[in-house]
Length: 611
Image (cartoon, rainbow, N blue to C red; front, side, top):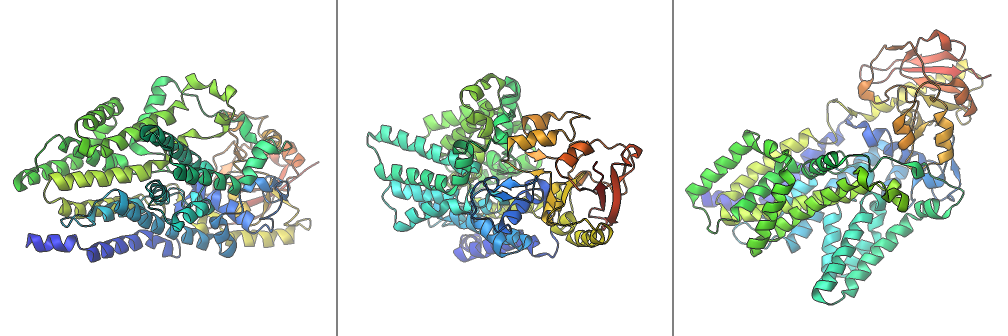
């Protein structure tokens, strides 16, 4: 009976059915008429950026061509490259449909990329377990939450590594080279590949020294990747390093190298066990690290455990998860050195299992290196190398989902060699992982904290109503000449609805505009984050995230300078709140309003009275 069940579980058709079913179930919220996604770095930014550029008729314009929508007009260089498949999706489809298609592609590609990589380079075929570990790894990787703005940057990592290894071992075809050449079209250089290419270069150098032979083909492949990425991002390179007339606000970044030694170590530990939320998550604290550590300890025992011993060990493993034993262990201050020592010991003693501890050590080193760029003792680097002011070095850890998934599969291979019933445990594992992934997915069918739908965040119907009312009540209104500023809500809401704004969120805009907008709130308060970062050019005296929004709230004390707004050619103030500050009675005048449902904003539109 057990043999029949085992044969059924390890059958390819069974795993194809499981994989297809779980993948469809995972992305099914995207097919609801209303679904909810994180507002942070999605609804408040990237979706609007792509929409503005896609509909601007200036996709191929020169770098200094002004796109008028945001912040009184930003140069074309502020919106990134035209050679971007995500941009193409937003050009062809509505933003919501483009978002859905992008997400489906991301998870589908993640599955097949990891499947192909594991099949050739990690999991040897065995008639006992067949392709079970491959499907486990591919499913785990595919069901992780991926930030849509980065496209296939992380999901394609296994396939990129696969192609580079093919080239190294002379197993490549023309498809490997073609793939590496077109990779930048759906991936981001500054988000990840500037670091991945650096890692690949370091590996090439080590390999050349170790084998005392230069692998020219591998070097050419890595070099080609770097060149093609730079060509794709030529606008960024030109604006940052060539164009003398464009001075980016990023030159005044002072957000790194701020923490003391202990806090920097804590951040290294946090990154090791949690990853970078929300841009690079592997759920390693919950699943990968406990399983990997158990596997490392199993390697210390030479024999394969009997059925009775295996059942006892599996019971202990399940009990450790139920009792939250691993949460207690992994958040301890000695976790990093403890795991590092265990990994080093296994690497030295067990040559057969060296890959697993080596990858764990790689993640530890990566986490520590990322935290070093938070340590105040290295602040002097920003003076000698200004690039460290603007480049977010923590992104070097964004390879973690790929590495941690590989670690998970290697751990399962050890379980298979050491314990019986591992194949049965794999089904339970996938079921638990899937339930957890659905709970922490980036798209939900019900409202939750930090999430919103396209409909109740951008409220297009309300804006149409507002525009119609405005045309009737203000004869001076011209949608292409009027400028809005938002108070208490993200400027992305107005921008999505084709209004021109004096505020906005941009990762690369002129420094002069940062100074100009600062005068709007400077008389009332200082904003330390604005001064050391400033990518969000907002009226900072009130929280703008929708999770803090309360209906029917009246603002008794306004804190922005209307004269400074007038100098920025502002015509209207848009807010989800009713203003009730008598001192502003002669400066802002309520013209019209529109009430949304219980989950969406109310909109109040004020005319700015300029002298």
